[in-house]
Image 1 (cartoon, rainbow, N blue to C red):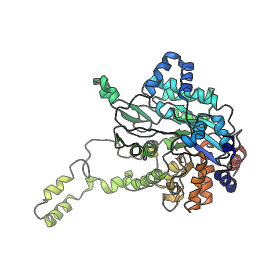
Image 2 (tube, rainbow, N blue to C red):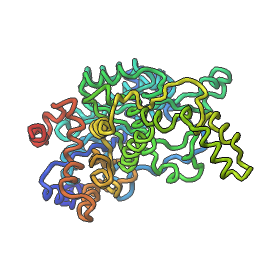
Image 3 (cartoon, one colour):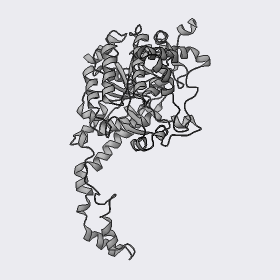
Image 4 (cartoon, rainbow, N blue to C red):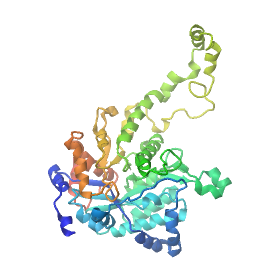
Length: 475
């Protein structure tokens, strides 16, 4: 085992050749269940611990094929142990070609969606306490991301104050959805409440006002990372037999949903300087969303709506005359003129409502879109995703933008069977001409560094890359 840990690697060679640090923006801790329960007992006592596993691992209401054989095994058992033991993880980083890593909880992926308030809040408190303890001696190389529950602003703020203010954690992962039974069902047929689920966002049409949470993040210097996936639910990724079908694009879909909610709700306008990261879904979806927003603005901003789409400005006489000439007696002038009075496409409004979908953005030109999207949004990308290159292709993106893609290894989960393969896999994009060296530097170092330091310039203080990060700020 010692020889394997110390053996030379291609990853280490690449790290030396590129001449800049590599920051892993998304490694995974695989928690030992018994250790989690020990901390639940510490926080809330044995009675709550006895209920914890059933609440967190309750069977889904849909028959959906879930993850199985999801961790390295067999010849990669050392990697499995590495993902569970932060001290071992830190020791192996150099061979993996990685200088510093931010670690995200596997337990949190389920815990953030627990409906029971007590179990959800106790679980987050126990998890964060455990993270602070087991990472206490590896701060030069690794830092954990605290879990922040978001079923209400109050519970989020309370856990932020505890995790950051008391435990001293400096990164955080936030729930991005409130998943509960439809209120009508819960009220009228409570016995069926566990059989259905409705998703509410935490921005735009949310159940609560989450602006106090975003302000607290600014006050504490904490960037907002999310790790929400969509596998199953009531939608179109719910195969009862095929896990890969359910997994394809699952993080991208959830990231897209959260990004749209934040952007269209004007959160990035109201809270400049607050960064958001959408992890594990890549950046392909983000490039499509970014460009699609421009194209919708061009056709649907309020001035264009009134100038080109207001049915009150229809020339009904012209339409009737065209129908007389070209309707062949089948499409009559009366039918054509009457169409304008129907709700929906081309018709009158059925009710009064706010027509300006971009009102919260407070923008007057499409040029402002880039700043509100490109500046605060970061996209966690796995090493072997060839779509990572679209982030840096200024020919594709409006205003010649480069989206802030950042390296996230996903070490610890099934898609990384050997942690020493991640950096070489990422570098293939340079070797294949999809990225240049400058883009690779941004991807592996500059973007993950700026994600954390925008709100907290001291994020990397005391780490092995403190000096290199400081040079970025000075430049």
